[in-house]
Length: 332
Ligand SMILES: C[S@@+](CC[C@H](N)C(=O)[O-])C[C@H]1O[C@@H](n2cnc3c(N)ncnc32)[C@H](O)[C@@H]1O
Image 1: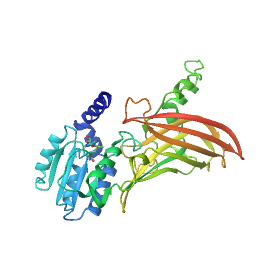
Image 2: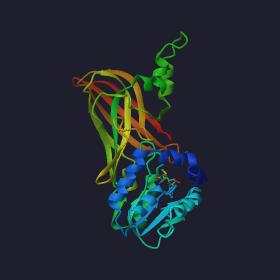
Image 3: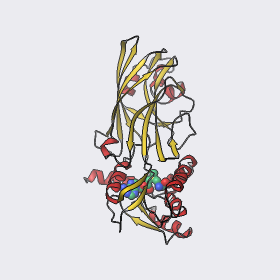
Image 4: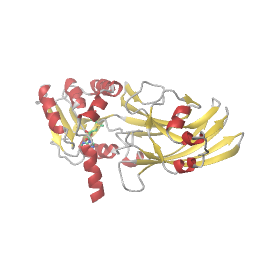
């Protein structure tokens, strides 16, 4: 690991050492209760479990409640010293063993029946924790073992949302500012776009969502998460298109789907916002999109993805516009 990667990594684990981030995650009931139900469905008495990135131990506690015989609760963050107290406070010292380290590097006495991990960052990929989970799977999961989540889909929806468009950059420049024309600033904004997470529950969907990728957490390699996808959208509602909302759906178990779509109850991930320049669209228009997710090409933060979106806007068979956007993944 280079010096830069080491420093990014220590800052990353440092960011999980305080209470606030864990309060945010634990107060997300859709997330936490979803994991609780999935673990109760999958973990049977006597099974062994690895909790990759245990944080304050909640997923290990669910596994202990489900009757697991041994749980390895692994984390590299200093939060683990408190997790040990939490394990004791809940009387799970016999079953849960806290392991300080990086899950893909620690040695365990034997392979496990189940790996559970809440590894998803914004639009799932931010933090790139799935890379550790894949490596930990290859090292610690028994053949035929179970992953929680078992698979993940990433999706896009084209939307109209005037408020988001104004608040997150592009639309800000289209209104006259103090009586002056600032529209040329839009190009400066486009040159450096973030895909922030936003509350998209007021968005008007202009077409159905499309799935960019589905990754199988048991079988697929790391490369499957850094995907390259072609999708089409047929506009079903005329309006002003402002961009796309990105969301993910994690199949935590056969019976539990954790969705972060804008038309489902809001989670702490909210939705990821991929703005484009406003376009007046008509029913029947189509957008063909080539969407790529890559590690930050500057190399400054390997945990931060960059998304490349290349599109064509087609009306009555004619390409009426082409566009290219690059959005930086964000931690918030
Ligand atoms: C999103 S939090 C989830 C915490 C907890 N499982 C929960 O559901 O509340 C991710 C946790 O994984 C830890 N983590 C990330 N990568 C890790 C790795 N490779 N090895 C061990 N811990 C890791 C972080 O320090 C953080 O505490």
